Image (cartoon, chains in turn yellow, orange):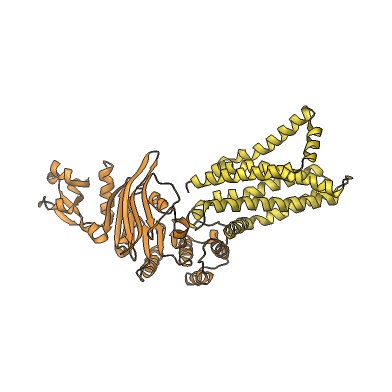
Length: 207
Length: 285
């Protein structure tokens, strides 16, 4: 466990030089919110989420950090766990900040528990979609596998489009609300599958 | 005498290149020069020892332990210096201290800071601001700060000025003084090895040519010279590699064969000449 936490801390040190851009991003989102530009704020938030968890992949590829991984006394699987934990933690921070920001500015008449549930649902969807792309990034790297990042987004739009076309969006939403326990369960299962796949890929990777 | 590294019949296959049946051992307390022309398989062998790539066959033991099963234990005590650094360009030398402390259980920040001071490296500087020589010193500082018992250097001296190279050789000589620490030193600059190496392992085109004591290595080859008329088919058949001039030829031959041709001038060869003529011979140049 200590090694996994060290691997998590390593990811934060890795992105440390770029954290100022990350913080600047929140200022931009805040600015869009103040200006009432909802679409810009949401798009920028999404862009921030995607780019932040891609940072470690980009940096290790650009700087050939695989050589560092090849000489330090740490199991490859621990590095993978650390990376997933980093993505979850950074997404959690983004989610909490986005939630506070959104709720503060929201003009919707929604009570806080409904608001929490809907944002938790969005957060879980984001984690599931991210879980699909991470093994691909470990396999191909960010440069070759840049297109992988877009697959979850495209899939999400296809699902929403199909649900809307076949008029099951509302009934589907109601079903999910009634069986909400499924959301974290599926998220955890997908993440576990993703971690297993990534470990397998990374163990075979030649540095 | 136990071995720091024991490599037995390792092989690795890439499209268009095969490393085959490489075996050598580096006893504790010595420096081994690992030589061969570009593309001979030196870096591949080093990566196999470090378990950075998967081998097709053979076994590798470091400190008597299997290098795959005991990967982490071995790396706790192995320092590595590549031809270029393995850090983030944006990291400061202080960041590297924090990173390495996360990975190495026996990391000693005080020694790291001492080494930085000794090598006149400013801890607040970023890696990208360091010269090649300074980056080499940084990698050495890292290696010395986790009590490395084995140093693996992959062409560290390429691009270094003679003063920096001399400093490195001095550092390596001190490093092995206690008889417990060892160095595997891959380089193209063979004059460095003539100064400090105890053992030589020479590979060419993925095959082992020689492994053993340096003096035996140098002594097992002769640089032979003769006139044009001396380059008979029999002489050619015994030459490992040779070069023809208008007035004659020169080439490398095993010492035992050199005595068969008393008409040829035979003298001790430099390591450079052994590499060059072996390369020429095996590549039909």
